Image (tube, rainbow, N blue to C red; front, side, top):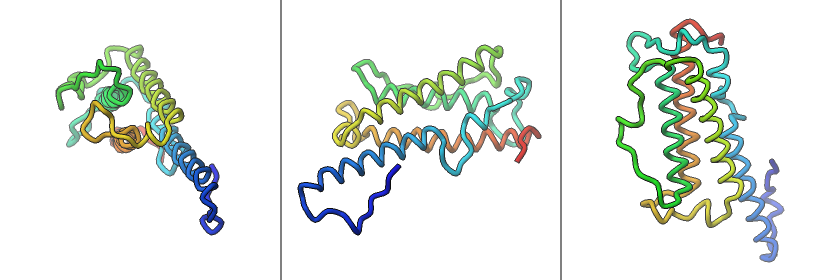
Amino acid sequence: MSVINWKNFPADTNNLYFSAMESLQNLKDLLVNFFDGRNAHATFKNAVANMPFSLLGKVPAGLPYSIWQLVEHMRITQKDILDFSKDNGKYRPMNWPAEYWPDETSPKNEAEWDRSLKEIEADQQAFIALIKKGNENTLFAPFEHGDGQSLIREALLVIDHNSYHTGQIILVRRLLHDWAS
């Protein structure tokens, strides 16, 4: 990712367009890096790596959710935001909070766990694709079907939401004595 040297910012307005496009590309690269977890935070992949299946449904004392419920909530929420962001006229809002949190504390089997992890990854890649193909209009313009939301706002929402719950997953793993700092 390149950094703009503002001291050398062109006074020539013909070059302003190219500098703005470079800034837009820098922003898109930054968003992709956040989705990929290339920052100071632990990644989602690291947070769920080598997770013993037997611990997925455990709810530590004083906490409301298991790791499975947190991961499923992330999957469901991210999918909803992705569907809203690429609205093709078929988007239907979900009921909060009932449809965003699973009732079950654990997956039925390891295949369900693996499916959930794969869907989170696939939906993140779909969001990254939307960002990469975005331009100054599609990134910042409010969606016609929303009430002020834009692609950049929704991308930041998913990044923030997933980062928050990734931290919670690590906390639960620590409380279950399954996280090496």
